[in-house]
Image: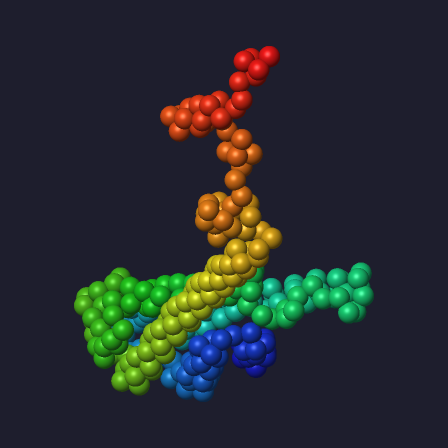
Length: 290
């Protein structure tokens, strides 16, 4: 496997990642890929050759090795590294799709027009693609750890295994080559995988919390702008005259001029009758003079 090409492909993901994503990529290359290429492949290179059983029965050692090691650790880790880094290519392909749309948009509307402010910024669909890739990577890591634990019953690698599989004549003892060294590398790779899971979970929490805070600030800013606009509208004297409950409608009734009906309303009460009698008494009697 050409790990240099693999590293060159993943190096483009680094500029679109967060701080947690950059740490994750460093852990993958330094603590997993480099350890795998430099040391782990050599430790498991003679795995089947050093698997020795205390019998010369033809085929017994091969069958016992296949029974206890159905999938080699080194090949399982190679598959894990390939599968766990593939979701990161989703982000690279999405950014490439945005770049292509941006190029077509500029060709159609001119170089000054822009469809995206930044094609690599995690907003909109790219944010969802990045978040889904994190969930997929975490699921792959957990799945491979479960497969490794399920196949070998634990992460511990014993020195001696007892085999009773045909064509072995009876129960035979088989010895694993370099058991302590293989056990150390197994624990190291499992620990590095667990660290990557923790980094993925931290990045998921960081992205979601950052998105929630941004949405909350946007809603708060919108409410503040609406409150300021409403306050300015109430302070305008040309807009307060028709608003119910405003200061213009709460003027003192004594300061207002009397209404037409109120000014010319006839008075039929007792005070009105007395005033009419006084006017008649003071008027001259025209009938007597004639």
